[in-house]
Amino acid sequence: IYPDVYYAGLSYVGHGLRVDVKYNLRKQWYTAVNNTNGELTYNTDDGRWDLAVDYRFATRYVFYFNWRNLTRSVADTYIGGRRLNYATAGSLINVGVRMDL
Image 1 (spheres, rainbow, N blue to C red):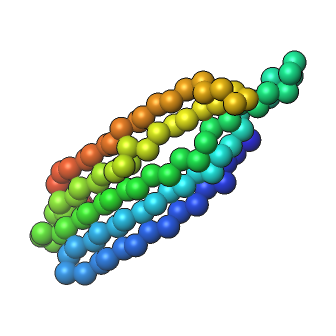
Image 2 (image 1 turned 120 degrees about the horizontal axis):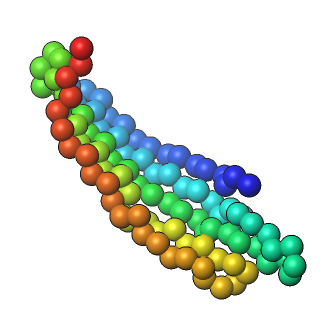
Image 3 (image 1 turned 60 degrees about the vertical axis):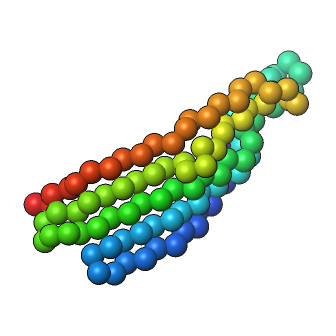
C-alpha cells in the first residue's frame, strides 16, 4: 500500500545561481494488517524540507550545496494505537565542486 505524496517548492535561477527549497509530504500509510485481530500497522504523516544551492563560477564548474531533511523529521510507526518505532533519519548534507564535461 503506497502513501499519497505531495511536493511543493520554490526556485530561483539567475546570474549563475540556482536555489531550490522544497517540501515533501508523505501522508499516513498502512504497511500491514494482523489477520488474527485486524490491527493495522501504519506510518504517520512525514514531512521534510530540502534545500539545494548551485553556483556556476566558470563555464564548466559548479559549486553545489544540498541539505536534505532540514528539520530532521521523524518516521513514526504504530501497530493499532501502540507506538512500534520512532526514528529520526537526521539530515544529509552534500557539498562540493562539480565539473561538467
